[in-house]
Image (cartoon, rainbow, N blue to C red):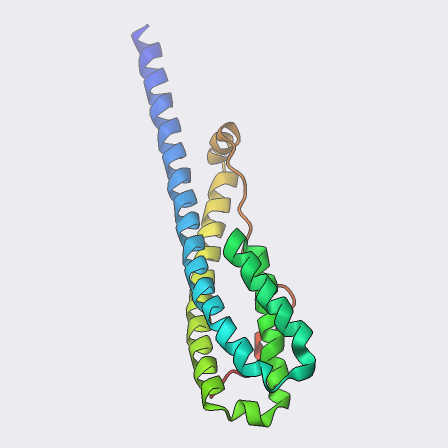
Length: 176
């Protein structure tokens, strides 16, 4: 009887330890995701100024500018990373398009916005690396024995890595 109680107590301690280890990693993932949200928000706060600056030079690109504004509004309401990815692709398109407007590239206001955008982008890249590292550690943990048993019992699911599809950073010149 005492042996059974001791075995049960040890089993409960092991389960709680594994559960807590998984929860710790899950909380790190959530914290990392909120870091991305902070930098995306900073980046998206630059967008209205960028759109207004670019608008005067790019009359026939109005549809692109309107889509950027709509995506920014949608992201502010949903905080969905996929919407953030779409917005990033649209913003990258604007930066590519501006290469065709030498008078815009020479604008002091545009250069200042571009500098701020580059700084936020650098911080965002670092936050994404941290997030993806935390997600990878979490996903590995919940899929390894014996943690996979605990994760199935308590319903822990794999988290999605942050990837921006179709963006090619090396093609975007945001150097001053």
